[in-house]
Image 1: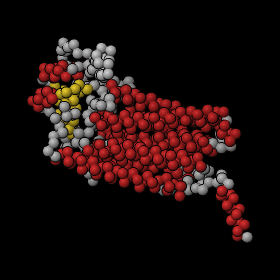
Image 2 (image 1 turned 180 degrees about the vertical axis):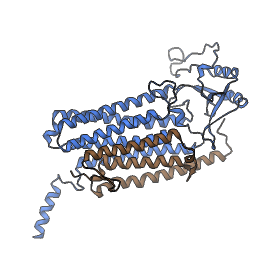
Image 3 (image 1 turned 60 degrees about the horizontal axis):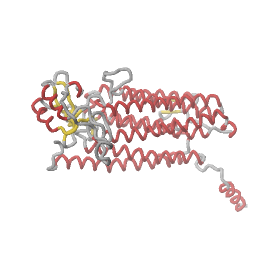
Image 4 (image 1 turned 90 degrees about the horizontal axis):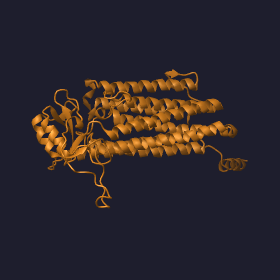
Amino acid sequence: MRATTDIVENETVWSGGNKPLNASYGKMMMWFFIVSDALTFSGFLVAYGFSRFKNIDSWPIADEVFYHFPFLHGIDAPMYYVALMTFILIFSSVTMVLAVDAGHKMEKTKVAIYMLLTIIGGAIFVGSQAWEWKNFIHGEYGAVETRGGQILQFVNNDSGERVTLESFASTLPTDRSQHTGDEGLWFVSESALPTYSVAEVQEGFLANPDLLIKTEMIDAVTGHKIVLDRESSELKILQAMYVVEGANLVRNEYGNRLFADFFFFITGFHGFHVFSGVVINCIIFFNVLMGTYERRGHYEMVEKVGLYWHFVDLVWVFVFTFFYLV
Amino acid sequence: MAHKLSIFRGLVTFKSNIQKIWGVLVFLSIVTAIEVALGIIKPSVLLVPVLGMKGLNWIFIILTLVKAYYIAWDFMHLRDERRSFTSSIVLPLLILIPYLMFILLVEADYIYDVMLDGFVSWNF
């Protein structure tokens, strides 16, 4: 009698279709993909923490880097824009849960509407991130870099506000132009030259007694970047090697070189996840419209992409904290 | 699928799953708003170092973990899953990530000290 029962149980166990942890195969695999992806992201964020702890007294201050807000040009608005982006992403997470919930009740129209809202939220988020990147890459004030790779920024002595290179750099006659392959050595290339040469910035700086140099170093007591007095500024400007405008993967006007690298890499990798999420959501959205899941009898696919979408939101919560808040 | 409709250890119970979703959204928004407000105001009381880091940063990290918990438990409905399934997802992360953080951050702090006290100048 006992043996017979065992055989029956074995047949149900091995014939497939059972759910050991009460989760279907697809859902479980989505979860374990998310676990591995979470470990990847934590690897990146911990590496960021490593570089930051290594340069703890000279790391750029987020509020001085991210202060743009659409249509408020020139107004110092740190945090507001990323906070808005966070709300958008959390909200698109909510519409996703609502879609999953409607899927459980087999309400096709509602699933479609909520999926569409989720896609729109995701698209707005990716767009916002692109705008954020544009500001970051373009830069606003410009700076110079010393031989040791330290960034020197320029501030006004009276107001303490940062000044742009173009507001003080002088114009010197020069015939230096960008090296191109067709005019010189074909195997040597050169990136675009900065608007001003080091000599122009130096001369303009020395001619303007109002200007001071803001260094990378953070004052341990006040938590602000250390601004040199005029005398040391005049000595320091002579150490300038490069003019830095905006940011690329080599140097950036905000401070430590690694800062821009991590910014591009981590927010880029996250942005790529959001973008793939939007694409996957679109596919599922059209499947919903075509009634694929209605015929299948369940909307579990919506639930699976929902898990991915929430994960993207979850990662953003951490990126937001470690890049913009801490 | 049966949903567990209580959050905050049973302190708040919702009538339906949809209500719970909106409730969690309100909670997450409040937490984010607190984070943003603290990030803009930066109260000087909270800037004193606690355990090697600014007190404010600890608050941010704790609030982030709180948000992560509610996103995973309610939006990703881990709350409704079997306990064994939840553990197999959460435990690897809870063990590996603090481990990695511990190693790399301690190492980074050490490198910082070496660069600070060494005989090589980095600021030139």
